[in-house]
Length: 166
Image (tube, helix red, strand yellow):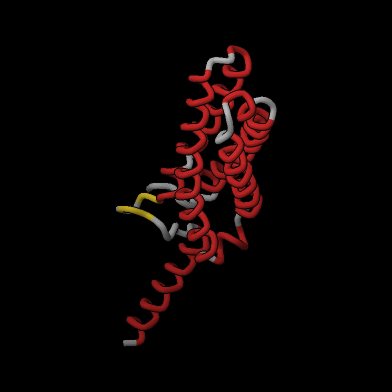
């Protein structure tokens, strides 16, 4: 009886220690975390917006401004979905907030998403005024923030193993 109690106590201590070392994400589908699955979509869209904005500024073809508007819309929508999953994981796991470098990624990700939202509003205007200069400047700023958030995100997933599929 005493041996079983001691064994159960050791098992629960190992489980708690494993959660401290390797916290699991809350938002997941079939053991696959949602945030790392969704995060590449807004990144690709925001880089695409910058490329189509530059192309529009050079060629003045309205088609490129339309592409930018669609890309920024899809980027903001998928970015909001990824942010919701990330914020739920961040807010519900004390270990993530205390022991991992998640704060800079959260702040930079929210900043990029807010700037992208304002960029989407700027892209609702007529073609030339939607892109030059406001839309182009906002696109450049968002794309300059993305490597920072991506680097911190990869650090969290691959070095700290949060959200890593095992």
